[in-house]
Length: 249
Ligand code: GLC
Ligand code: MG
Image 1 (cartoon, rainbow, N blue to C red):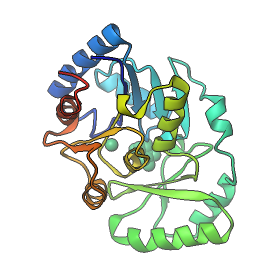
Image 2 (cartoon, rainbow, N blue to C red):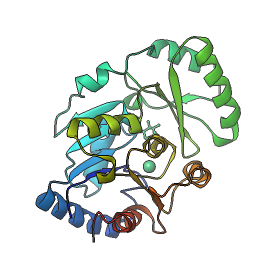
Image 3 (cartoon, helix red, strand yellow):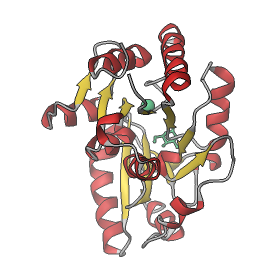
Image 4 (cartoon, helix red, strand yellow):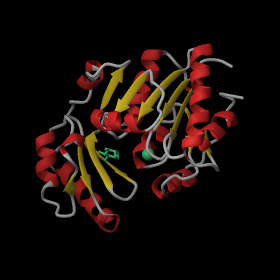
């Protein structure tokens, strides 16, 4: 057994089955203590919503937090995002212009202010309208010369982000700064905003059994031995996958 980089989404991945979460917490704490394993939470939540979840669930202290869908990285218990990462996201990004374009779409309802960030414009979008709206919005952003990407999750959340920012890119940045190779990195997720971590293909991947169709469909269309689809839900699925890859026994 040796150190690894453990990266997990929170809602409906790490969190969702309290008993399994307790079990996984114990394993991770022990592994960190004995081997220096690095624990990273990668979530769509902003810092205030992350703190809210932390007050509701027994989450262990992570080493690093990747928040706001990869647009913010926080080290230890600091509350200022890593400036080096932030400085890489500005490339051809104009948040005001993005907001103005999105405002032309009636089907997009802005999410609360806490979920809007310097590199993240977030909306609610009903599944039924999503296909058409996403295609038109993408074309419009491109027409206006913006290098943005659309991340649609769980049939209701739309995040518009700079091209260079997502959970996968943030994890690659951390891997490089921590010097941890692909074989010793594992990412876990359940929905659309986790897709970039699996697509990046710079780690092992665990998809929990309760994953959303957008992630499952992609997984089935792009099979890989580096990715494991668990039977169990949430933290139970993570435990299953960590054993499958031999990260824990
Ligand atoms: C979290 C965030 C929200 C985002 C969603 C999907 O729920 O609070 O802003 O749209 O994750 O990434
Ligand atoms: Mg999730």
